[in-house]
Amino acid sequence: MAITKPPKPANSASPAADAFIAGAPDAAAASARNGVRKGNKLQITFTIAPTLLDRLDQRAGELGQSRAALINLAIAKALEAGF
Image (cartoon, rainbow, N blue to C red; front, side, top):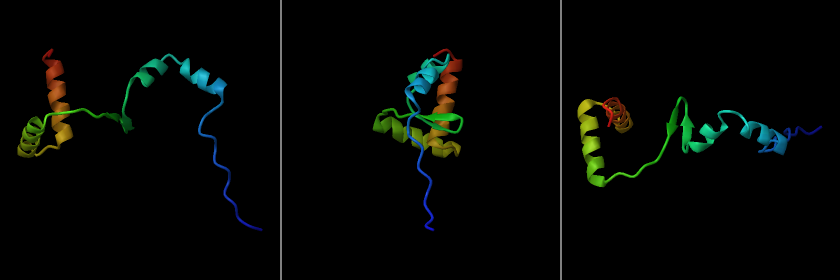
């Protein structure tokens, strides 16, 4: 007897299930966000001037932080300041 792999499940649920999920109270909020979920965070993409990126990388290095950590810190501080 040959060993066979079980069939792969379909990529999409039935149309009724899709409609049910889309009707959830938080469905609009989830679909309005663009990006890839990475644990508790959401990966996004944005455009930045090369000179500003150079300054960001230099400052992150001086602080011993990653580029992403410094960006998150700057955004949090700007929001706290009401910017």
